[in-house]
Length: 331
Image 1 (cartoon, helix red, strand yellow):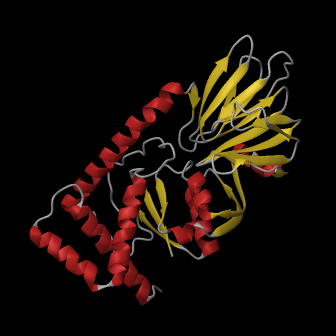
Image 2 (cartoon, rainbow, N blue to C red; image 1 turned 180 degrees about the vertical axis):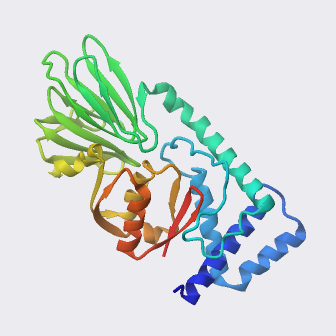
Image 3 (cartoon, rainbow, N blue to C red; image 1 turned 90 degrees about the horizontal axis):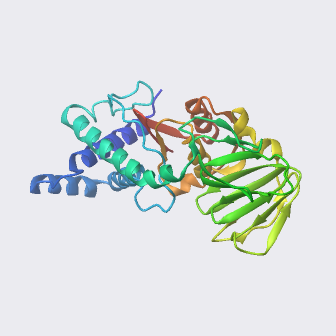
């Protein structure tokens, strides 16, 4: 049975979305502006809900974010509401509001495409949302490219060079004593002769795990200081932390995504959702920063991101509001 407070929260959230869609992209009339002002002043929950919608819209447009833009989201032909978790919002996107919202989403997709072009031009191989690809290199090495990831290649007679431009990859390196295998990622570099390791880009650096044999990690790439990782060891590096400390790493968990699994051990929710978004052909947005910092552990399937989201909701006692491909995760 739906609790009265839940129904009321859904109604407030629906009204906030209604107001935002009505005001977005045009100059409101004096009467509209005064009506919105009065609605916001009537209840602190109104102001909170409207602020959450504004934040959600900024994240959809990738505004005020330093991380690279993802591939543009697929624009659905219809923005009709799904049957589950609708609450009282079924009529929010009706009539002209649907047209206005579709227009705004199309504009956001175009902006994302434009900003994504430089990365696309640099990439020699890339994957889409939910896609994992194996790439055989000229020397017999193999790269397993994770979902929504991209690499550039720089193979010469003197060196075997790759650049991880986005996402994550598993590198299985063929031995070649004359040409070290080098991966440049987030201004750091990994060097190996014959080994296996994973590299994952983070918003502020990269995470490296050695799976077989040893690899050398330097940050920044031009630095002469290097750390050697043995199998089962990992480290993170970046501008904020520099070349981080060597820590024990779970080799099975580090490469689990290549087998269709996502493994999390006491990870903050925002990191889990960021990764889940690489498998979901839409956008999952967390409603507030406090919620984003909550911790979660579990093993999930990459092939069904919505089932994974359902499991996360049950584990953390959360809810979601689902508007076509857009999902808002909240308390």
